[in-house]
Image 1 (cartoon, helix red, strand yellow):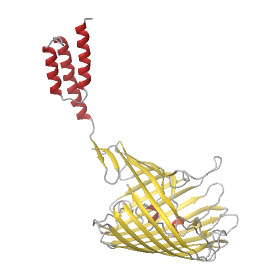
Image 2 (image 1 turned 180 degrees about the vertical axis):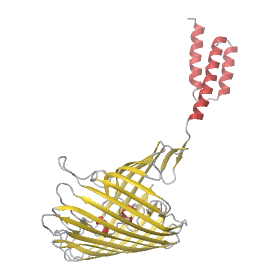
Image 3 (image 1 turned 180 degrees about the horizontal axis):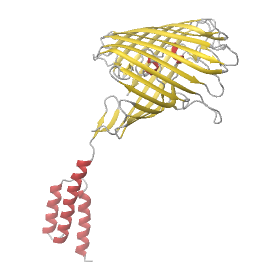
Image 4 (image 1 turned 90 degrees about the horizontal axis):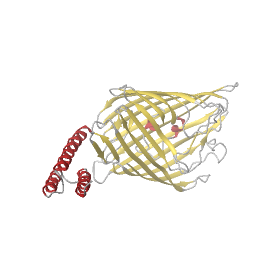
Length: 440
């Protein structure tokens, strides 16, 4: 092969690589003309390169026409999606930093600070019909898997969800911690089932929702490989006769039936609406020989401009064998809130729960709230304690994704509220707790 042919091939290679890089098409055509005129390229080489560039341009245009357009949204988080919505990926998270100060009556609850939640979440869509979500919290000593599920939307308005997620029970439980009015959920939340692995079916219509499912244990439960784990069936319906932008009226009801694992034991307990202390005044201890646990819940909420009311009642019935008497526990809460700066709580009728509050002024939104909650875990031979608590809350929403919270709590425990004998009963502490929160 002659030297000129070697040079021609080398230059051809360079030109072809450059053609796929950054320069424009017109500049390459002029370059080829110059190389042909000064004899660097033969007519055959010129024709070959010109044809390759022409073919590459046609192919590029075809690929560009076929490729889906991708949009990136960074408003409050990160979401990448195709223009038709068939595929998407979103990355989010939440950080909640708490401190608490306890004015003890009898027991030492332990002032302190903690990272209440440090969570990363990914969610998105695949092939238009499949939604997914994965959330992991790193606030404790180990990573804690929260929601982890796949949801099929191809049977709309029905949806099928498989994985770990919250059982459909309780308005306050289902409302995200990002949007709760108070730092912690009310005392009766101790009776709510929470997250478990299962399969659920849901649907919704004009102002109503319905959801139900069959569930096992949660991902983090320590269940023996040889033993049978517990299981449950839970369902919830909601209806909102009013569902305007700044007005809403919500009603809901839920039922749950749960069979414990092979140990046939359950334990119900809760902290005094403050998470930093490990003391759980209300604590039944282990209840043995349990055949099943039945739960029933009623819920209601009302929103009128900046004012709102919300309340729930939850009852638990424990069926025991071996000639022992059955048990009944119950709890309730009622709270009101007032957004001093004129905003309104964001009710979501398609989900039957509350969402994000968005300030309307540059200085943010201010909210004042008052709650009373009660839980009774005393019945027959089980003395788990009874308590009533009054909480005053003040929230400052600096923007839609950042807020500061302050709660003052007055606790009224009976003599049986002794954390299953670990602390003194009839203790009535006062609690001040603060939170800085951001989510994306």
